[in-house]
Length: 519
Image (tube, rainbow, N blue to C red; front, side):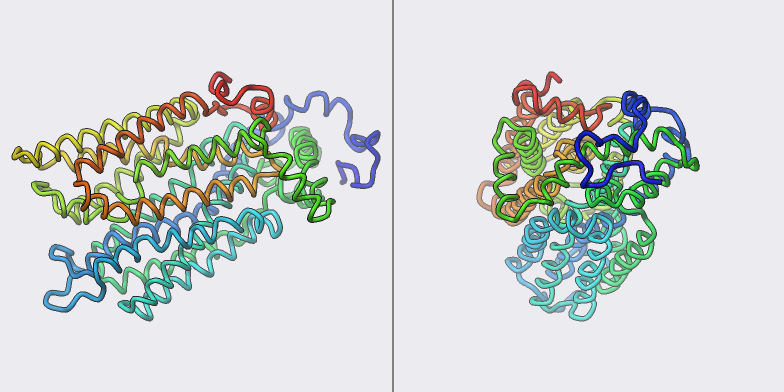
């Protein structure tokens, strides 16, 4: 049954195949409505299941991020590296090489992020995610085959980084496009939740098994991802943008749990899809040069696309100026370097991973109850306070007053909780929410590219800053950056909770950028 007109139909017949009353009550019978399968338990379950399966790709990325915490102490043969430490043997890598092992994945992230949006727009969200299981598996195979060979470690981290960068572009787009408006917040959390689970996987497994076995067990994750995600549906938005309406309707019915061929809610959502992807289909009909000019004209700062790009890129900058990735990559080193800490570095690392997972899981509920802006504001402010407290404590220790043994772990746990409730998951969610459909791939790629540039910068610079300025001054600078980030969120970031794609775009179109927070 064809609900929508062919591409060659005239504008006068745009709704010729759709009953007029259905169009008039579009908002009432689409993703906000309760007719048909729109609010069914089965539809809710199917959307969460699809988002979870896509999130397994983020699980693979998290394992890559967390691997350095247990692996680098082994590679450096540092005392206290637990079961991974081989006493008396020469260290396979130097401290400088260890910094590159930690940071080079971010360079791969840069290379993976830029083309990911275009590939997702060309091949489809599902197809790109399935293909990304290959570089993840190859990266771990290199570590297993050449466990202490520096060039192989560099290659492994770069290849894994390419896959990480692409995953962080495509998963948020996929999860936003399969979600009803009422579920967009919770489904948008899956990316960060699964990344934290993957980080905890590396922390916990690395504390229990030898170094090579850690890589081998991490290598099973992309195989699990490919097998599980194989039967997941393609994004209905992508299918609609390619005029594959029968497939889009089939995917949408499954995602909404609809068993009726005459479900008015699904029909209404298909009508809205037709309107929202009209710009995409027009763009596809242009020549390459004309398409480039059209895109350039759409990105002035006062346009919805320009405002969306500015807001999401700013959120990525604020996110990374918390230096959270440096904390994750060097968790054991941080605790090993804090004199007076009474909890072992290995135990502290696992505790931090558990706390981060639990806090991210809690954001499932809070993002719907509290909204995006309040969580972002509270997150940035609490991180500033916790890191500032640690800076004051370390400064006092430098003057002869020993730090409280539990305080470093407590401060870092508070920082992780605050990050996981706001600045961790919400920039990724809002990246997919704010970007117009026709520019979603490009805006997402640019924002994630900036994110990975900063991941590389903070990861590579963290140890050098601590050595140059001291831990207290470094953490004090992070505190100041978080306070500036709080101001950015207050002035610029709009609230998107409970709004449809059309309402979000109207807010970007008709409100001044700095007053967007009032919408």
